[in-house]
Length: 276
Length: 259
Image 1 (cartoon, each protein chain N blue to C red):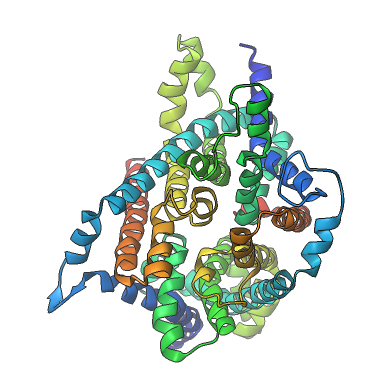
Image 2 (tube, chains in turn blue, yellow; image 1 turned 30 degrees about the vertical axis):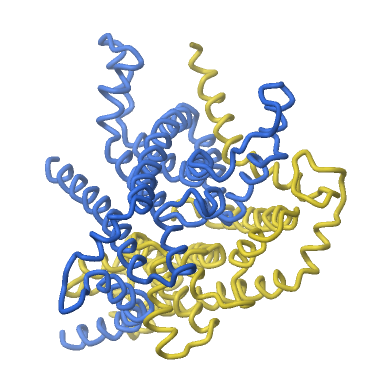
């Protein structure tokens, strides 16, 4: 038995050591910095951070965009997942393959496409000016809307994948049964499909929400230096003002929200499997 | 509404939204004009040539390629034994280790890069390339462990035990029984790892130095100061490259199961 134990640790130690040095310890140390004040530990840096109207605005914007993106992805995700589930097995595999594909392409490339589409000489503005809706090109880029569109495109596939596998586990006859018993399509969705695929929605929602909170490329490219999210604010604080304290406060906020969402998910999932 | 029509319509619009933008940047890349525009001003390969001549892109591509390859190999060398130990021996603290290897998916990458810069790179005066190599490997170890664990879970322990009873050493049983059976998992982990590292931006952001950065970082820097079709061309080439890799991988091992 002792031999097994020594072997186990020998096999695990290199990987764990690498994660500790190359990730865990520096991050923990850096986050701890946000709590250190003159002569001890305190929340002074947090109070200071939230006393700035700009910081508060960025904080609420980040949460708002995260929620909007998650809800939009959920709505589109259900429509797409139901449409995929309707088709046969072979079609399902092909559609899933197509939906996974963009996840493998560089996010810089994926986001940059919106610079072309939403830009001053892009197709959307050409259309608006061509139809006479506006005398000159509109400023569509570097706005909250641009970030929102970019994030939905970035994270929609994750929601669809989670919902497709949740729908797969849905017993085949429950929806027709509900319809026979008098439920309309909307009623069947809210009373049968939604409760039975709740776990998939939660998994997808967590991925999309934490992904939107911690995305850097999309707000950097589509929001510019004016419409900041917490990630781009962090970068700006460090690169412009060398303000590591604010950076560590933002780091704690982002990591905290991300952990909280995941912990909530774990808890809900555990509650359900215990109830079964 | 006609049910049989709604499905295909929803799917077509969604695919247009997800993949259509690539068609547009591809077209914008063929422009003969000076600035980025769609529809492009005339057609030419002018910017394709320009991208290959641009020194900063060539250097950054080499860095990204070797970084992704090196980090993937080291992450597998570290991650496969660790995943095996967790799966077969279930040591005390397995739960904690599983939580630990989920953290890189939760902690924002930009924070990881900044923390490494502050507490590893600056104190030890580490160069840009070793710093990127350590950061990317640490990021990929959890990916490797996850994917390989999934393959290991499907492999029955008793085959391995039978091999040992028949006289194989533990290492021999691993080499002859376990390794061939988790080969697809390892291949999938290599491809996902390589792509993850190659596309990675936030972790590399603070670790890249002036003139030495990965390709996506070089693209971000370039687009800050230029508004020409170069980035559209590079984006198109990267999308095609990923497309080729994924199609091959999908055919070989049904990669979408591991995402």
